[in-house]
Length: 148
Image 1 (cartoon, one colour):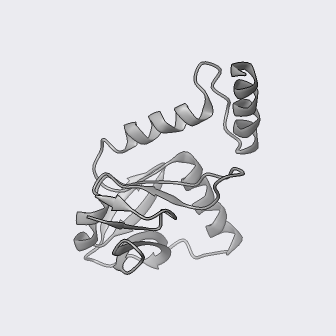
Image 2 (spheres, one colour; image 1 turned 135 degrees about the horizontal axis):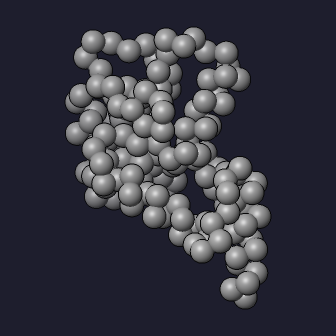
């Protein structure tokens, strides 16, 4: 059974263009990556999330002056919802560098987003951007809203 899981991990890793880690299964590898990224301040993207953001920006032929904006707004089943989009940087925005990308966040949103790790799983059981937020006291089942 363990041998089958290792092979499945290798297949999944190859589908997402990641090098399989022979010593650690794919799920454990990304869990360790989340733990490492969430130790720092600001907003962090995993390699998979950064790759997807770049792909979207290229596919949509978006202007180089547009940055990825990470924000929160009231709503959702837990009280606050995450928002991602491309936007023009303003003087009040905080600029965060992660995975070779510049991400913008309004300072009043950083209270809720400091330490958040954004991933982009692309497997059979999950697809789309996900948020791992150390500030959240609870999160909804879909992962797109949270409470503090």
